[in-house]
Image: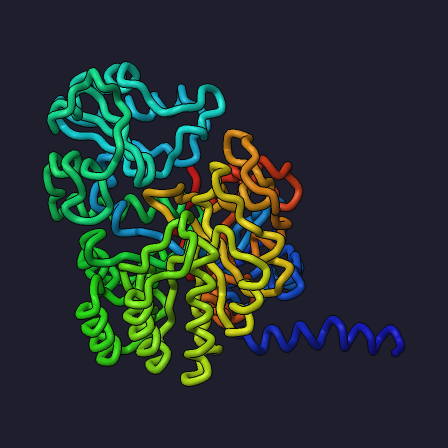
Length: 528
């Protein structure tokens, strides 16, 4: 090929094709960046163009500027790194909305001094006597300066005139004198108390939470707005909201979704509670009468979970097979789900539970083909290579969460990644874990927690971790044609970062801060 022909074929012809395909100028172009597309080749480009909600082109600055018109918005990234919008595959969204305005959150705070200041600042927003609470998202070992739970003296000092308590996951509660006295506990016993009966995650929620006045309708609406903005600020653009019904006022979210596009894409589960065999039969009837996967690109029903049958409530301490009467009812629901093409996302913390389910799912698959349903095993703290392979052979996927960050649980990340099974990252926020995806990424890549404590024996590469929080999670929700990568034709969900995810030290990934977040080409967060 001579030079003239080569110029025509490689330069003018592609340019003509691009301009023919996009006769109208792009609405927005981003240039001068390091854009991690997270496509199959993990390509890196300088620029991309957006029309409406979707990406229409990626490439060099020159390629993309050729698509801009006089009314196009041009965003000069000035060398910043851009990643696809981060997706959380396991999130208890409605829990946080109920009382978000009362919560001084300590998620991702590794300084005890700063944590106490955050508590004091939140108290200052309220009148004396008003209740303040932190519903999880922290653990005592995260404070690098002075690890440990809070003392009565510390909590009384930051909240001398307001009842205050902090829930540590589902296990413990730390409360000040006013909060303890309100529920009949002698403060002389100290700040730390077992959580059951005081603060739980289902109604009636526990005696401490019962002291708090119901949240007004207007405040719920504001909490929803504020919480979604907080998640956008940390780079989240989509999540799977689990545990509807008992965990919050889902009608507030549904009403907002009906009013217009949300700043987060939200999938949710079918609402039911099956606590016994009769409940399981009622769940089967509801599943048979309902339509799976009504997600409209913005909001909607996706599947079943995270406990399709509540008596199968797994903990890491499970050390044997489950009783047949429990598994029989669970499999009634699972069989109805398979026959109706429903997705299942099931809480499985121990490998014993994983194996018990796989034994039964393998038998089910011989009767009702389920290998295209992408059923998900969630948490999988100690899953073995054999179990991973069996799940993969059934077409299943894994959802792995940052709840193990404190080092008590060592996720076998290398076994999972090397197996080739599709797995995604999430948080299990908002009680048992943080809500920030970059903390999850930092943990999975570095193997330490935010205080520098060793937390993993097996880690992921930066590429593997980012793929798991974007492209793979899109696959879990059958959205790989629309989400998860920055490629032409997909929704323009993206995050501009304040530092380079690919080159900073692994233990600095925790502290990445987005400077801009887009959902469907709309700016939903921009740092001032």
